[in-house]
Length: 112
Image (cartoon, rainbow, N blue to C red; front, side):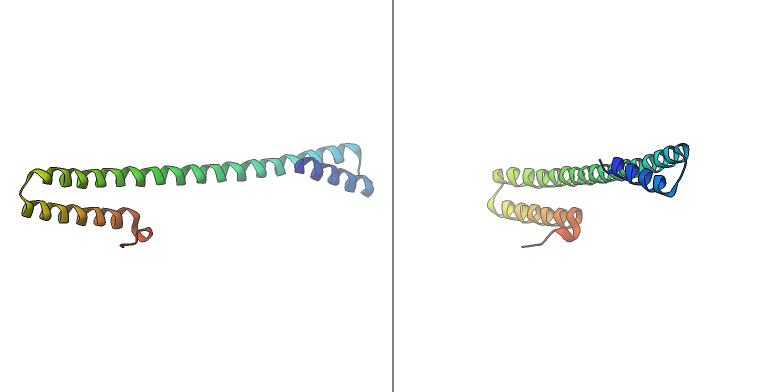
């Protein structure tokens, strides 16, 4: 719709300027084509940027999943050990989870 409006406005302006039919058609087609190409390029760039952002977020989630699962496995295994060793393993696992969150999420992580 926008491309049509620009093309029609350009043709009207050229008509009022007394341009020949050939000049009106060629120039309005070229301008409309350039404008359509620019719109397509901007849309494609926005889609690619969004896709890259989603891929990055999925990579962060996968890394977090791996780190948290490893730490939680240690916590689960600690249930079979003596109480003192269990407490040490739980503290170590909690520290690893906190480290993983800080390392992977960076400034987005707040230690509460």
